[in-house]
Length: 308
Image 1 (cartoon, rainbow, N blue to C red):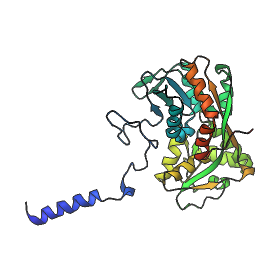
Image 2: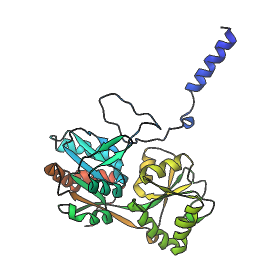
Image 3: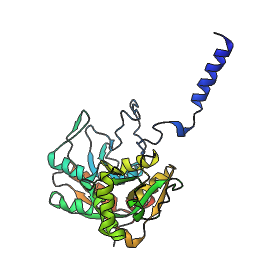
Image 4: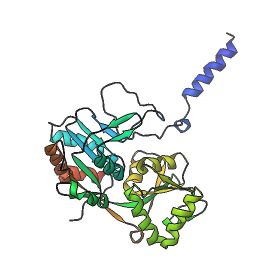
């Protein structure tokens, strides 16, 4: 091989290795949690990646169905729970949208790709409306956290989004949770009416859906951040904690606050399922959520405490 050609190949290789993170096509893909240790690591970005199924799926001692927008607390929450309750070493958590979790609880299983999961939950956690709809399936309900809305935009806010009313602009690509299964969707619609009346709600949820400048998500707590990060959407109304967490990860997003008079506050509720296979483990977990340690972890990730 001639020296100039060898030099060119070497320079090409070094250039490829030195490519900045910004040139990598899956650089912001989940899982954003810390993967479990042990076993062969085979997460393939964009191909094999199941971030909303967490922990030990085989013979779990505790199964938790948790509304997906709380996924960011899991690393610290489960570590602290296991420390306080060392008997529980195998825990399986699903952080799918609460409406999907409710359907899974009712049907007995869920199918994702080629996999069917028929675990029954010991604990069901979600927003107030969804949990109260399933009250008859739970042995009591506790309120353990609260949240509010914010708008997630790309770093520097290039479209200069200031308020919810801006989301009605024809030039703005919006990522919006589908109210059909995302509890946050209905709460955001309430905020639209507060900010701009039915006209704003109609513009975002009908006109812009029709012309495809509003994208309705299937799994909002993953899709909206990814769409904003990959410049597929300009802005997305999210729970405050979701934008806060992306900033904790140092991903290039900004958080646009929504004033209280246009905002809504969500209550996170849940309880032990009456048919829980591991009822004592479920009770221990719910008690842990209400403990000072559990509450401190939720606060660290931007959640507000329950109203006393």
